[in-house]
Image 1: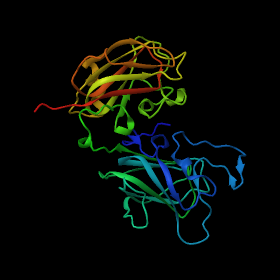
Image 2: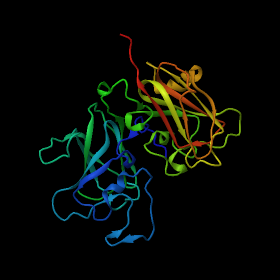
Image 3: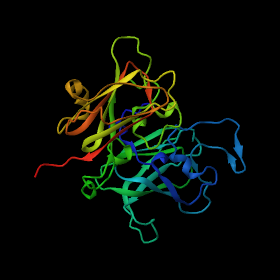
Image 4: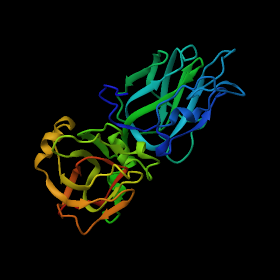
Amino acid sequence: MSLPTEFTHFLNLADSRLGSTATFVTDDWFAEVNRMLQPEAPVWKDDIYDDNGKWMDGWESRRKRFEGYDYAIVRLGVAGIFKGVDIDTSYFTGNYPPSASIEACFSPDKEPDEHTAWESILSPVSLSGNSHNLFPIDDERPWTHIRLNIFPDGGIARLRLYGMPHRDWSSHSHDEEIDFAAAVNGARALVCSNEHYGNKSNILNPGRGVNMGDGWETARRRVPGNDWVIVALAHPCDVKQVLIDTCHFKGNYPDSCSIQAAFVDSGTDEQIATRSLFWRELLPSQKLQMDSEHQFSTELNDLGKVSHIKLNIFPDGGISRLRVLGLLHKTSP
């Protein structure tokens, strides 16, 4: 389901695919805490029970019979700056928490303990059952861990923390090759022509796709033209290699592809599609094959520093992953 907010187009930093995992929970009797970090939408299963009760797709604690509240600590797969949160209570109707809050800490070298100073990033808010509970977060500090507090108990289907990965680019050598299209490094898929079958942001995820749904796939094109997606790279760079993976796409992979690129130092994300009309060609048109990794290096044009790319696929179809390997751009002395 599309969520019309100004922050849900950012990366979900609580996604288990990025390495996010719960390191502590006060109670998850009915439903294991790490279920709420899964990338797939929650599901309802009729008449499915386990030894502890009704099976629920999320985190659910027992009914509290003493004072206090439940909470879970999550170590994020990548440190990040938060823009907003979705506390999703889908299918939790008579068993959702009436309210919740979120605290965070920056502890890259060790797990939080009793001496950790937690900072409030979301004051207690009221929740609705079977709903996306969306709240913006106005905080520019990076965090490595969060503590989700639920008052007093209950179930959360999914926790999605939208934001931007935090990296200290000054610590990276200009001779170190980096994937600037990786979501964990801060790349973002901004806009695309069509994403009927698969979300455009999937192509920036770690690893190879697990199935066709874990990629970007457009509807069958019935009019002239081609489909495309625009990606803001993690940092301006000099591109040295591009990898396009059509893993799992066999009868529906694009016939060919090309890439345009530019260095964009102003404007808004909303304007980027119009501005891309006259970007220069980074990768001339290349034929693609089904269910394969395609590496391009000698085929690339040297454009110097680029910050955004536009991947064109002809005429339509699906790809699993995009990698843009390069070096931090060296400024002239």
